Image 1 (cartoon, rainbow, N blue to C red):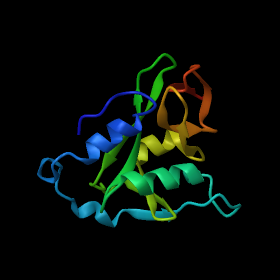
Image 2: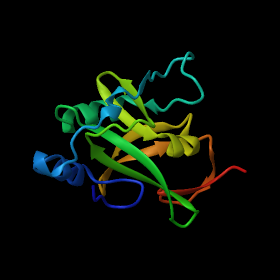
Image 3: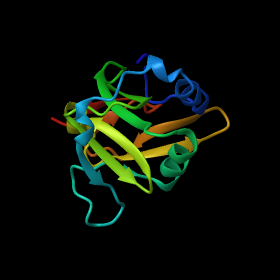
Length: 154
């Protein structure tokens, strides 16, 4: 699935992606039985979890339909070495971890989870943009000023 690179996609872009004809999306894979992990903001949440803010949950419930979820990936690039990539998806792969809270789902592949475990996914709405963002990433040593890229702790 083609998606814009960087920290965030605007809400408009996410809605546009969600409106793509369903026959153009990949069929669901047998990996739908990926490990599901209930994410919470409480103390019982583990270090390997992704935490969702209330605004993230609310926005995901507004823009996703059916089996759609938000996929968070980390890829090489950006001014600090690694960058976050968000997209809407319907296919869960065998190595994916599913974090669900309040009916909203965020899926992270096992390689990307290494770089974002313990982080928080938020939806921020400002005058100049609306976007999903990764906040408080304990795996990041530093990031760029716009928040779209980061370097990892060694």
